[in-house]
Length: 312
Picture 1 (cartoon, helix red, strand yellow):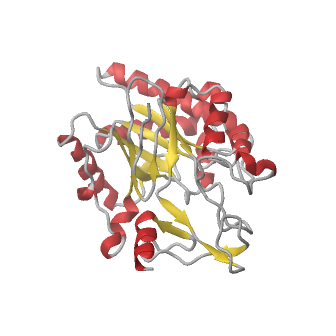
Picture 2: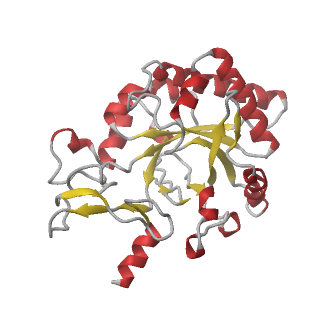
Picture 3: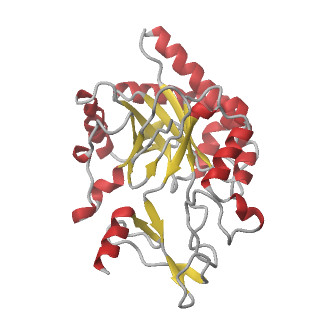
């Protein structure tokens, strides 16, 4: 059985072998600031398409507290959770982190028991005030690109302490426990460095495996950034740079299948070609042009790819 996650900007497919489906959708709040046809607002969301909606993203302040990224988010939180009036079975979560987030904020927050306690208490308060059903930890990644090796064990502690606090708070007030989830890497070396898999899966309700950006314009040849299986051009460690290998690795590390969500990106990566070839594996020398609405070099949302395709 397959569960799917859709987002305004990227789409996560949640793969589960459990008895119930999850269709988890991310809402990229920055999409509200885009121009013309690129603009996507909370009012545009169909709350009946998903089982879970995740609002991306929130922030961590200098006091290790979970806070809105922008003042306008406070109003948007209310609109976002108002979608449950149209679908009472919908679950909403607030994500903290993301691809452009300052990772040092996470490192500082998990560094001491007191800092983690402050974060957890503020998270419970913020989630309840604005009627979210849970939290999504989007730390990319606890240990990676020079991250502190101690973050691996401290991420485990964060998950354990959050789960315990959510359990206690739910029982104290006789209401449903807050949901706890995490978005995690699909790269073997990052998985090994960042996660105590058998421990964190005891405390997380599900994990979104970010099975995309395996390849991109940071390489000297073109490649599918979210391939389902390995290709003929893949050699060395790159034979593992695909969705099938990543999901199997999480299973091999001890993650229960019913907790794993498979990430599906609704965007493409653009390359600058250094020859006339445009095949997979063609020589490349950097990022391609930016999308007309998203405005990021080397990144095109799915709808931007379609616009380009139909203009040819």
